[in-house]
Image (cartoon, rainbow, N blue to C red; front, side, top):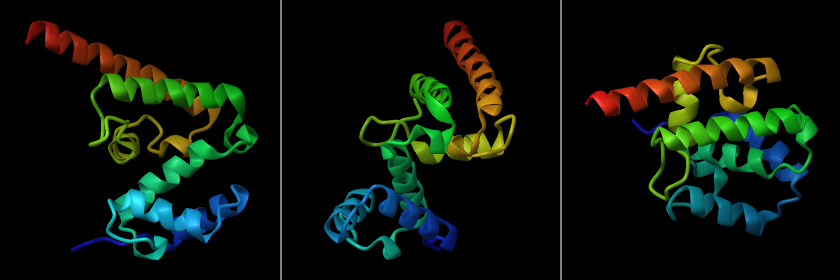
Length: 143
């Protein structure tokens, strides 16, 4: 069964669209891009597609204060870098936000998505992911 976007995701879309001043043409292009050309309507996005679009829009926000400031933004980038080093990439060679957020919610020390983590929680998450990266490197050396 295909899971469609949720009302919570819809709220996030419209907050981002408003803050970024995205008009209908931009929204259509984004929906086409994140659905792989399947639809030009955000209302028809699947749950995973909507998550990827929200993560993309989060990264586009010019006001870093809404996400914890420059320090928090640098820490998020560090987490994305570690995820990339772990090979958590999508078909386009970029970090797979679905996989990252799923892992963070399931195994992360605070069980929250990347953009929901506070500065303090980001520090803990970086430590945890660096340990995972070291374990991964050791497994490759011993494997």
